[in-house]
Image (cartoon, rainbow over all chains, first blue to last red; front, side, top):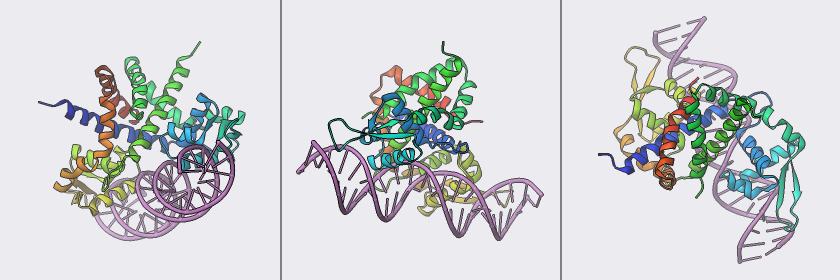
Length: 144
Length: 144
DNA sequence: TATTGTTATACTCTATAACTATA
DNA sequence: TATAGTTATAGAGTATAACAATA
């Protein structure tokens, strides 16, 4: 009979396949002037958590501070985020959404989000609910 | 009051954030000699569906045939997949896992899968079940 | 003419390493 | 000495465009 381990392994493989495929689809979904997945993710975190340092954002997104630095630099250049000096530690830099950033965030991620929304709307209500409950679990997978 | 649309939008954003983060984590999880996420995905599909053409694999993984060609070329070079001529259409090429590929697949993806398995094992049984039910829904999001 | 695959090239994303500034 | 961020460089992953072969 199947051991719990083999079930766990199959689940891990299936999850890996599913998220890999979805991410590729999302990356391919672009509108002219659209923001990348990394840019949108960083902006969404900034909107939720307020001013945040590069290192904290990098941790939240599971990337290295240098990589997050590049993402933030691209957003800063477009005027979507701006830096603030940290009140007590001169080494740290807080990044925050600008009013422009806040106002264009959802518009410039429109293609990606619409693609997911359209797909979600094709699910039944219970299915949509099941997916909604699973999202925090996926986020927690990354935790430790 | 919140319209169904705003709920759908929030769900789409949350899902996008969660899968982006998980994919970054998986990509970072490597062991020496380990296979990449794209390589493992292609091999998993080949194991499930048997010999498949470049174009069909590309469709399944939401990438362009040229990109899948590069993934398959890297696997072929390592002797993990091999090509077979299509029985009736001389243009098409079927790729199949070699015995070597089948035997090393799970071992060379060990770090990535173990990372997910460990995280899954920290969930409660109902949570794990909820996540398992959501996986086919995520796969279906990509569908059309 | 349409389709499958290949080759060449470029861009995005992220990583590692070396450096500067502050604690 | 340790930590936050920057700069430079490299590699993986994927896309687009141009091409060859077969249908």
